[in-house]
Image (cartoon, rainbow, N blue to C red; front, side, top):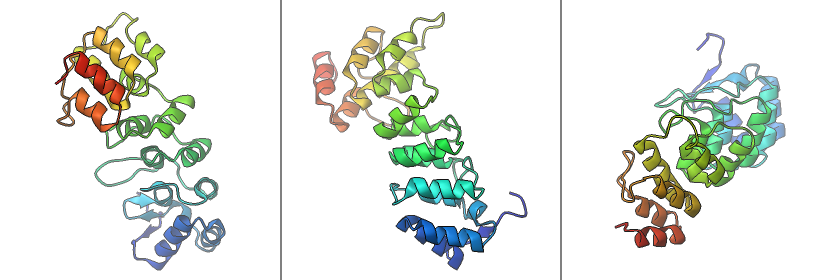
Amino acid sequence: MTADVLVLDGEDPLAVAAVGAIHRGDVEALRRLLADHPGLATARLGPRTLLHVVTDWPGHFPAGPATVALLAGAGADVNARFTGGHTETPLHWAASNDDADVLDALLDAGADIDAPGAVIAGGTPLDDATAFAQWRTARRLVDRGARTTLWHAATLGLLDRVRACFTGAVRPSPDEINGAFWGACHGGRLPAVRFLLDQGAAVDWIPPWEDLTPLGAATRSGATDVADWLRSHGAG
């Protein structure tokens, strides 16, 4: 961090005022604060930036897209990193909160759609969105050009992309197939589930990230059609 970056404690009156304006959606109050306090747009509030505040859980704050545009226009770094146990950008957080409007605003302001650093295996915003079942932002990221893997395609039910992963010279590994199968069950994508079982997926495979079978993942997601189909194919 460079010496000219403003660093504010969370209890600092300026930080409290800025965060309050963001949470209320009071764009004009935030505009005045930015005008009165040069450097506020790029300030760090502990491990976060103001753009992280806009996208923090639970997201969907009033006037979120306008707030993103204001901060970006004032010089905020749309690709700034959280500085705690992970290095997520604001786009990761918008993806994790299913806040598609704010996600669009960040991308319009130049956010890196495939930025690494997610809490999910250090991956991209799409990794967060699919893992946390945030389907609006997951699909918006794909629509706007995010790079997809077999996992993403299976979890979102993009069957053409799933099939394409099996047409190249290098076939997906058993772990990749099993992981994609689990993801398709998690996403409730029955056509992808069927296809991947035909490709050799193990119906009761348990992933390293949680002790939950594909049937358990489908049941948790409320995908009764997938759960019933799995049981009919021997899932326990």
